[in-house]
Image (cartoon, rainbow, N blue to C red; front, top):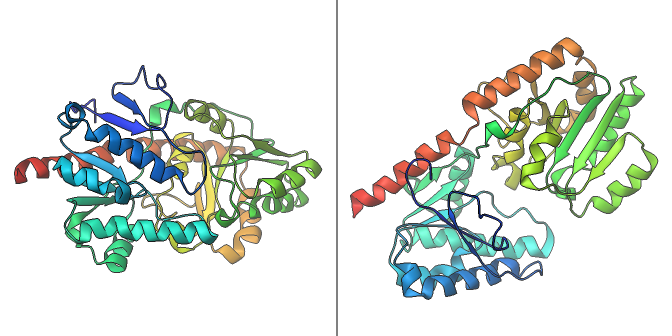
Length: 345
């Protein structure tokens, strides 16, 4: 957006100075460290910034994550500027926290349904359909903004086909299916394939995964990586996993890791549902399986990945990322939306 001539101010809890070399202005907001209070505290900090007249005068359009919108709404109403709700994913947490988050999610989208804000963005057509049916929002007010990736940040290198290096990165939560991955690689090794598994991240499945790691020298747990360190780590692998099951939140998703795997030149293996599917890919390097067949069919697919198939798959996945996974599409959608506000004005 900045490269296209727009001025951008980013509000988030990053420390002052973390964005000093970025082409946008950064405002560091205070945020509670307690889960369940983070979004509310961040929104209150943002409301204080917006309440200052000099700050408000610089704003033309505000894009707000759904987690923050209900708390920010009184301040945004006083601001009298177009507001766009940004929904990168419905609530993904389980249990009581998830229940509370769904209430906030509905309140946020009702702001659009009731005409208090101007538009909302989602990450996939399935996500858009879910929102319109669940909340009663007009389809014309919901815009699909797919997850993109900075393809140039990833520079795939040629790596040996043995051992077969598999990877997952993201939240290591039980509801994301990550506990199925050690068993898959274990079965693959039992079938005679020298394979390794790297899991990058943190989450509620970490204690169980650490117990598995202690007994499996081919398994490697890596703490959450800084954004700039992730590309180099991914390019040292052959296959990226998408184990998220076919529950509501994952069926609606457009996971960023999917595009990151492809930009890194990885082949992809995952569970077959709408949130993981991509038009234009080839099963030779992008394979989705029924959840009940993930282990058996996954082993069969991984086992046949010889050096030639891996090399060709890496070239094809990277080529697909260059043509289909950059931020260009998202920027086009967003610019069109911004222009519609100018036209309305």
